[in-house]
Length: 117
Image 1 (cartoon, helix red, strand yellow):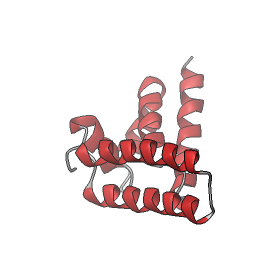
Image 2: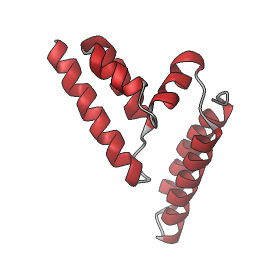
Image 3: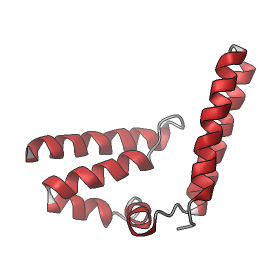
Image 4: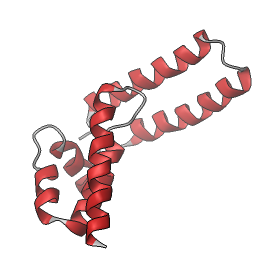
């Protein structure tokens, strides 16, 4: 089972790295999952992830207080707005726009109601 947790953690890190350059793929949720999987499988990989200079502080903020840094909140808001605007410009059907509005609005509400890291 330890190898499965490690594999899942490595896959999540890979998806998070792709998410750094692709605005539609979230980075932080994959890093949080990776930290969870590594905590169950590899102390070395877990330590590497939570002490990483870029990713570590975000993970520790979330683990310690459920906080999201203001810079991350702004980046998420810009990405969400860009996706929504792109859908409107591309002429996506109105029912899809309505679903996006509700779901993305919920995501933004969740993000902005978290404490600041």
